Amino acid sequence: MDALEEILTGGQSFSWTKKEDGSYEAVLNEKVYRVRGEEDFLCDAFLRTYYDADTDYVAARKVISSKDELLKEAVEKFPSLRILRQDPWISTISFILSQNNNIKRIKMLYDRLSMAYGHEVEKGYFSFPTPEELSKTSIAELRDLRVGFRDRFIMDAIEKHDILDRIPSLDYPEAEELLMSITGIGKKVASCILLFGFHRMEAFPVDVWIKKVLNAYYPGKELSYFEPHPALCQQYLFSMARYIKL
Image (cartoon, rainbow, N blue to C red; front, side, top):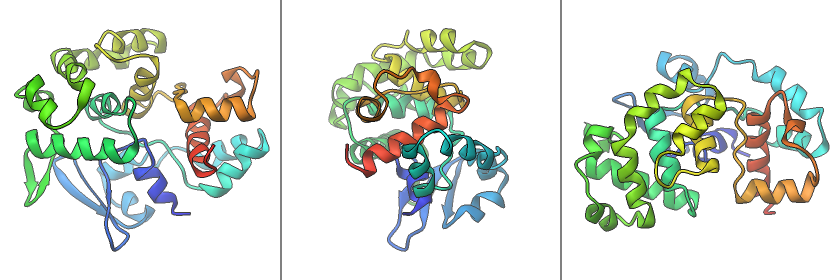
């Protein structure tokens, strides 16, 4: 199992593209990054923070592995899984795109928005558009890009993008409520944005995959069962649910 592939392209980020030679590319921080392994994240200051390299995941995985057999198997199968520290704006639009969608199509829409409204940072490589850049769009243009019913959600997120600046100072329920003031953002999408865009590790997004694994393996259990590492447990269960095809 390619652990790096699961981290970069397994549903928490849509910035990365796996190349035929096994490397990964992404336009982040006004630069094209090319990586082959974990060591590439450790020798660059931006990537080191992005990869959350200084968090003690080894200790967290020991605690998670001790909870039950499914989580133990998940840690063994994805031994270096972690939560990336992503840009809040990119995460907001990415998880608006994620609604009723699959990873392949979310990535396709992410790339279309980048090419249509981002700026070229290297020949053929485009940044994800800033709120200012994306404000040039319209409902009609978004429909042409095939974002579907998410078009008006994106338009409202553009208009209200300033609220993202307030999130770090709020407690979790307040932050979640504020994000849900954007049209189309419900509890699940808000929790994804808080986790992947703001690194709020108390988040536990519940989507279709997580519902399946909770019903199959944890009937009647409260989400407090997954403390003190709920977000990381959720990510392990998400990866396992897709791997074992629940």
